[in-house]
Structure formats: structure tokens, C-alpha cells
Amino acid sequence: MTGYDFYTGAYHGGAISAEEWPAYEGRAEAHLARYQRIYTVTAPGPDSEAMAVCAMAEALYGFDLLASGEGGPVQSASIGSVSASYGGPAAQSMDLSPGGQGRELYRCASLYLDIYRGCG
Image (cartoon, rainbow, N blue to C red; front, top):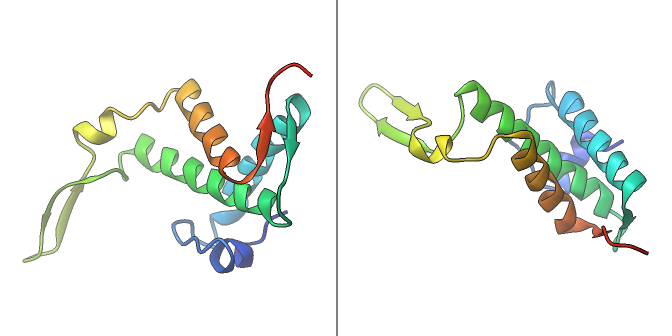
């Protein structure tokens, strides 16, 4: 289990709140466990698995923000009465399909882990 202190301290994450962390950490851990069941996964460093969990948790958090329409690139902003709009064409062009999300989660995990998907 990757703690919130590791997420904010070692990984230097900050997008996910302490209250939301357990849910996203659990989902990321489940994805990592699946990779370990079906692929050969090796951790080159002592914190590699925890770093991968943090990266995948942030990706899952980002997917949820985009799916809800709350996240994405800022399309407009004003300073006068503090206004910002999110979404727009850039957010709409992101692949939020299960396959697209799977590819991004794999990419996040492989930043920190060596994952061999071939025959062996």
C-alpha cells in the first residue's frame, strides 16, 4: 500500500487530496496487480512500484476530472472577477475510451517499472 505521505513527499504529487487518495491508490494498485499477474514486471529500484502507483493514481484522477467536465486545459480565463473555463477541443480530443485509458496507465507504470509483455 502506497501512503499519502509517500505520494506528496517522495513522488511530489499534489493533484489528489488526502481524502480522495485511498480510492485512487486502490484502483492504481489493482491495475498494477493485474500487470503483475499477466506480464513479467520487475522493479529496478526500491520505490519503483510505489512511484508507478502514484503515476497511475494521478492518471486515473485526471480521467475522472475530464469525464466529469471539470478538468482539462483552460480555454478561457479572466482575472477581474476570477473566472476560468475548462474543456474545449483539446479535452474532447483525448482518448477516454477504456483502451485509451489502459494505454495511458501502462505508459505511467512503465515509466518506473520494467514490464515485459512478450513470450518467454
